[in-house]
Image 1 (cartoon, one colour):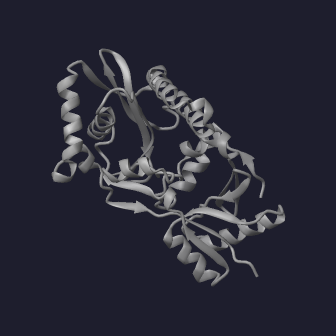
Image 2: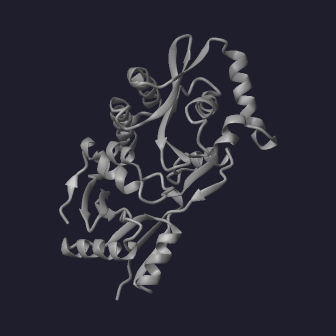
Image 3: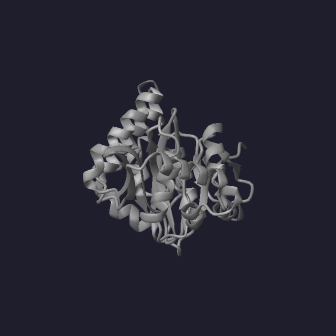
Length: 299
């Protein structure tokens, strides 16, 4: 396999590979792979009509699941990734497999691979209608946040995101970063760069989202893209931490306006952070998108 670093011009190759099957994993978008490429040294190759994506983090090299055409064997593509790892002298590791992918691999190679769920990477999937209406007793506290915001701020305004919104969104992200001391955290500083690049190529990447202003000042934004035929994946969402209720507001307003035509919203993983897990669970996902890692068993 001849791997090359991912670039903006590679989007058609990735879109073609991702759209051949139904994937619900938030990692499987060109945008995610492109804007985080500096953090993961993202590279890709084509072989036998299948797309292979290789990443590196904390000194560990691993593959995403091979993106094969429906008529091709996923299990054989996994074996090709194993051979590639061994040829480079690396231990084989593949992350982001669905339970169905794991079953296919196990059926083809019984006992060859160890398989483990990675709960910190499970995506949270929601009904868009639930997030749009916040109806029912379970969303009582969310409605209170929204209602209080509306009562306290008569000067708020929602706008759809466009290519012209970039500087306003970066203003929000910079304020958020200052509050979180992003410069001292490689992941958070990388996230700011990722936001910057996504906004720079907003139209080319096919992104959608919204921004909220208070008295004209940008205070919150959110954007994402279509993950598959019925699901929007939210890549980034930031709000001024000093304004209570903003996250609930930007979430609901985007579901009403930017994403109202889709059935599901994928709000990605919690990375094992207890606060983030609690926040995502508080919106009552309809299910979690499971992700597994596989590796060769010793002996």
